[in-house]
Length: 459
Image 1 (spheres, rainbow, N blue to C red):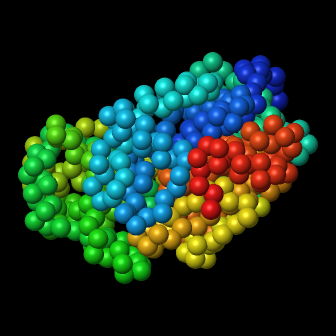
Image 2 (image 1 turned 30 degrees about the horizontal axis):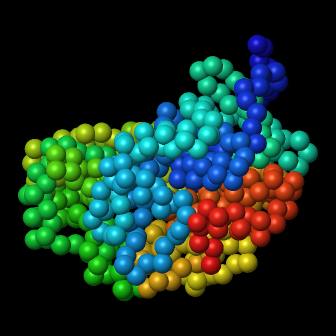
Image 3 (image 1 turned 90 degrees about the vertical axis):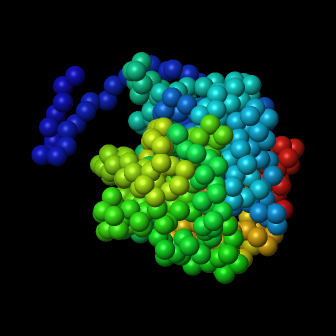
């Protein structure tokens, strides 16, 4: 192939013909909680589905990053989602792939075992899986998306589809199509995380230390400047602060490094401490490949410093060592679509109600210096309009890149809400096919009736 130099910083790559790898009714790109929920719910609605994932397992943030707390916000008073999101927990518990999450009434999900659970779930649903394939281009016909081009070890191929769901978390397909997306400025983006696990923990000794030194959400203010309603302040949080402060004083961690500190979660009887959420680095854009590279390297360096601090100053961790890192950096905040309707802070903080609701989510906000836990039964509707991008048809968005402002994003980015958006997107894609309408024109009553059939709470 010949390349033509156009400018000092660009080259022209001639167009080429690629073979068609597959055709399907609904194509879901990305298999995090949003994409996985979309694929399964579309299949349950009776259409052919293909699920494409760039890594070697399904589950996204849950498995690839290692964030096991899918519903750590849940309290006795919480009015929570109903539908496929709860099935993430019930299936995991039934297959001994979960544990009692320490700060809530939810199940922490074993990220390694969930990889196998997701494999089985996808195959049980009759979904055609494709791993190790990255989307590099989109295909459109007029105002409609009709498929994607993927790159893999097998080369470049096209996948054609009647409906496409962007579950990338970064609105990658929307960006490739050139339709409106937006990002919070990098200096204001939520921090990125390298999740890690440790082995060799003396569980009994560590839990005794926790009981003797209880922490609450008020203590989060020592690391992050947060605003609460006050009702959260005295609730128990599996937060660790003292070991890292002691390590800074001892010179094990640079005194200026405030990015180390955070929460623990599951600790097995065998001494494995998983989902250690203790590195939070600001100033990284997860849609910038240079920032991703820098974040992975720096995050692992800081995680090792965190383990060293725990060994010295967290009773029970004296003999602990690194078990594993997450497969990839944990990203909270990148692109969002400019949707038909963009959720607002007012919506998520004031029980927003919408005629086109595709599910509910509790009044839970975690991000941008704000923490609200759903302890009073309040909840808001997730509207179909926030899944519908402008300027293109037959594309829907699932997961954290749905339309909304900063504070609404601090709510809907959470994994359980991603399942709500995903199930809504999957059902809407299927119903638009079955009623011979586009995703823009599909009747919300048809979507809602199928969601109710799938046990989703709408109102």
